[in-house]
Image 1 (cartoon, rainbow, N blue to C red):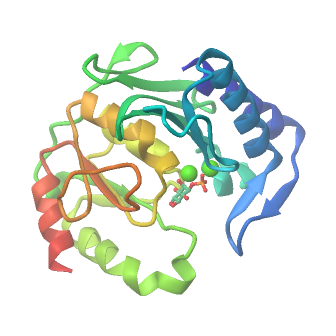
Image 2: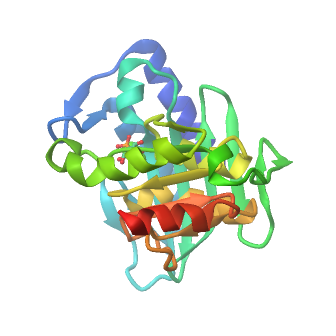
Length: 250
Ligand code: IPD
Ligand code: CA
Ligand code: CA
């Protein structure tokens, strides 16, 4: 939580004073803020847990390959939003142990909201216990999704699910920050989130936060989730099977 909060403070400093933007791909950006936040978080973690592995979006994997603990860091989730001054972005840090997320923190510095969980100990927002919503069926659910950066090349793969959920849910949103999408499912602000083409740093914290808030996280075919699979469905549990059925029908 400390690393996420301080990473978030670095982002806000850049947001206030300006930053350089570079392209990793045609529509995939990286800013000075991503890099500075990541550098800081990695140093802080390494100074406390020197033997643990680290996987960070902008600098890749580091640490002792044999260690069972891995810290998975997205130093700025929602870089496109951040670059435009749209205040929907977060720092996301998950701790994986033997392939499962066991602790996570997602910090939204614009709203000063800290979502956190430890496996077996519940999930919280700013220190208060949170729970998924009990809204059902899908007809009454508010959903969210996103698009990976290859959306221009693979739009036809991504749109069918949108079309079906737009027909069947109360509404579908696209905020542009997967970590916030997951935190909001955990918080009960949204009932479900699906996305293809994600990375471990997008999901590592959200996975444990949603499950500790009473929700359900699987792959898009309903099989057990792991951070290194690029697609996921997470819900309040109540609309999960209905969403799976829609995804399977595509
Ligand atoms: C992206 C955001 C976006 C999602 C993309 C992610 P980034 O992360 O989470 O909502 O649709 O798939 O890559 O690049 O801003 O850290
Ligand atoms: Ca991300
Ligand atoms: Ca990022």
